[in-house]
Image (cartoon, rainbow, N blue to C red):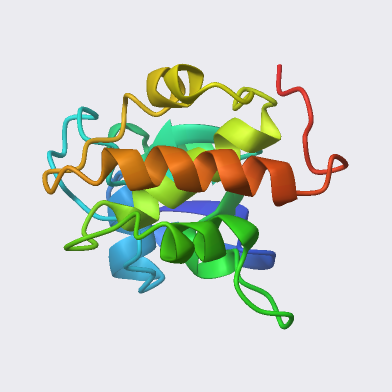
Length: 165
């Protein structure tokens, strides 16, 4: 039973025909659209490597059915850098050496962007650590990640911060 869905991915409208209604958003992004930034870490929603933004909210794409995304706006790590260069969160991750092997980095970056957009980051390291606790780093780059998020949230335009209900 093929199902057609329409959504916007990284600003581009997409019409996708899914052969199986059980396909996750993560698998659709990776296999149908060849956007491999979101990683399949645990495939159980426990590691955060698959984090993307859906209508401005952070989600674990491995737990979300693609058919439920009909009409949604999806933002992946591939869609955050622009013609002017890297996103401020990407720049901060580089400046603070907030990555080692890099496997979790796309999910960490997308979660940080979502947290900043939600106005959750604040200026306390403990607050950032709590809000990022759903994103695991096996290499232990947490200090750099926290510092990067704190710096980036100060650099991101206040117009980007918004309340997500």
